[in-house]
Length: 390
Image 1 (cartoon, rainbow, N blue to C red):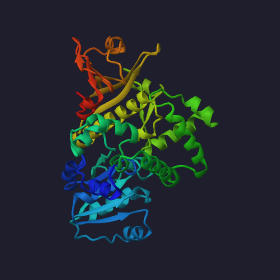
Image 2 (cartoon, one colour):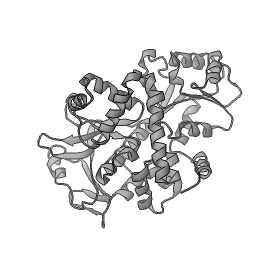
Image 3 (cartoon, rainbow, N blue to C red):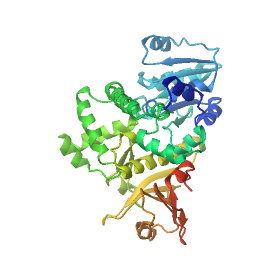
Image 4 (tube, helix red, strand yellow):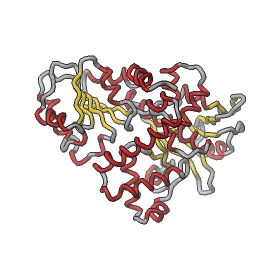
């Protein structure tokens, strides 16, 4: 465990995985940087250039500066934080981008998905690139903190989640206090911009219900009955929680993609520490977070397209995750805490998805191995530290 000042120093000096890609794009486009609260978006933005001007729309004085458009145009970079809370912010930003003769580089950061505010239209089309910053995963931790004791680093991720401040602090008591205030800020500040204040208690209850269902397909009707509201309301609240980067959805895969929208999705938390203290459930959530982070990285930085699903048939046979490439199934992933024998469900689904790579990720595993058909059994710490979607 480090003291707080030590954590702040490491965070300020940490080269995040998106940095070099954002640096390149700042020269030609507006950069939109989104992600969960306290993943380090503002810290990353301030590291991009030594010479920057910073404005946070939550600050009254800063709001006035923005309305008057009075920032220092001699700076190399202007950072607009939480700008999506401004009415018609996209049109406002477009005006600056189109009319300033030699504009400084511009980065807009926010803890809600900026495309969620659709009422302002698509006035920024062609003028920006978007990046999504995720919490730390084992792959990034290995890069930043070194390859030593990956097992210990993974255990800490499972216990504390991957948000930089509590992870680097490394103290469970500190994390439990941080976790409570982190969710409270989201619910009491961010949520009121998107949802009626009187619904917040129900949404808090929804979050608690989702924690118990991590890794399991959810029933909108069942949740609606528990919360004494309509299916439509539950779906709207879930969309709000996705918009605020509290949870993310993994739908079931079907050849007919439209059918998957009608089937029960699974939900996972961006903060694995929020998941109940059930080892298998925590590990599955952590793997889901790592996969989504890698998918978003490939989409945002490399222009690749991946899909993220799970497999389940009517008889209850299931594979935890399926990754598609160019809309074709590419990789099946099973997550186990200690089962060294390959899942029989691989063989079942392979009848329908021939030639798809198969990997079983195991936390407690004495020996890694492969089967004649190419199925791999890999330790969680090794695979997650070098995660590949091929």
